[in-house]
Length: 560
Image: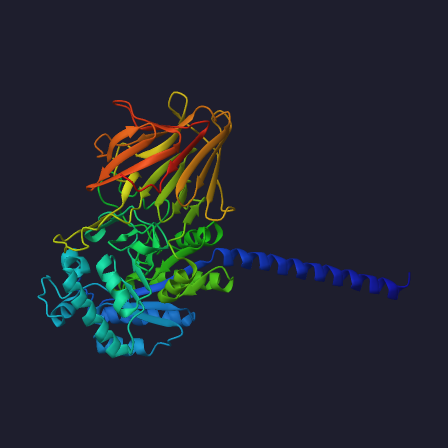
């Protein structure tokens, strides 16, 4: 073989290798893109804006204004999309008007933040009952503190002034909580397409929202804006997205036995959450890489009341991470109204979604799985080799909110759904509540890491290999039911047992082999078993036994 022939041979080999690499890379990128299109990871940057902060003297109107300026500057630096929601006192401030009008419309959305300050109340012809120009108490600072007729007046005033200033009505309206009457009114008269409310919490600032659709968006009931609707004819066609990004593992149990939860969230002001780079990278790692049914949703941003001085570090960390993820094609940044429109185009009813976190940021090495549908939510927690349902709450569109027709008279606000398992309220400092996997004479099953996949459309599948007796537990979450089965040595001996604090007020009225009946906040509900049997002996905990190795809970039944 001549030197020229050898040279040609090597050139040909190099060409083939490069060609194969290019093709494989394109296939890999194509698969990645297909996966993300199947389950997009959507992020909204939402900042809401108040003109005053009466709780802390040094937080002046100038400090609040400069905070918004800094937020805008860093968002522009990265060329991101973002949404700013204006409380009425900020809406009528000429400085904020000028600032918002100068923003490019293709990148920034300006919407409404529906807390109720003094100028809005008085311009609507009502009497101000607050202690300060903006009062955070629920009976003064939120729509729930006013009659339905008063709510409409307040909304009309806001909307007309917004249109005079910006030329059109807002498409997005947010608040820590908005009542169903107001939400339906704003959709029908002003055409809003999206809303957002607070994450689940107990007691923070006097507001309790507990048992709801845990993450992402849902269509609310016509009579209860916190409760997901089950049927299109009974829902308000405005998706509500949960804000603030709770720690999926640790937020839930924070404050067990105290009646109040601490805050562990994506908010950049919190040093042990959104203000810590390690925590933020952990959060976005599972957000983009773990299985997510239909889509995953996250909200980034902060109210200006926390000030730039306190949020700057965390805000900068998060913008940097978002920039990396955008460049890698792993997330989609949208305004709130864009996400609302996307949701309505893709879902006629609330879809099933999931949050899967199999790697803990702490040394506790916990793992968790959240599942949401229009019928229920459920949460699994793996801890030191054991597994339990930490939470199961049912949704019923017929449950009328306390604030639907009446105004709240308390400084606090409470929204609930219907509990089947409540690992927070049914726990104490000594006993952690949950529906636990057991076998034989009451020992807890022990097992290895969870394996989770979403290979079946609309279903989340969890497989748990067990050390005890050798075998596997299978858990299938679908829209209407929860199916648990087993195989191997554990098949004929496993069951579920509810643990709870002795002082916990359980809602169960009666337990029959085929159904469990309960009453919560004057609402009766029933949970039937399609397979398996309930058992509750005197002075013993509630148990659920399998039939032929399987338990099927019907979580869509809404009879009494």
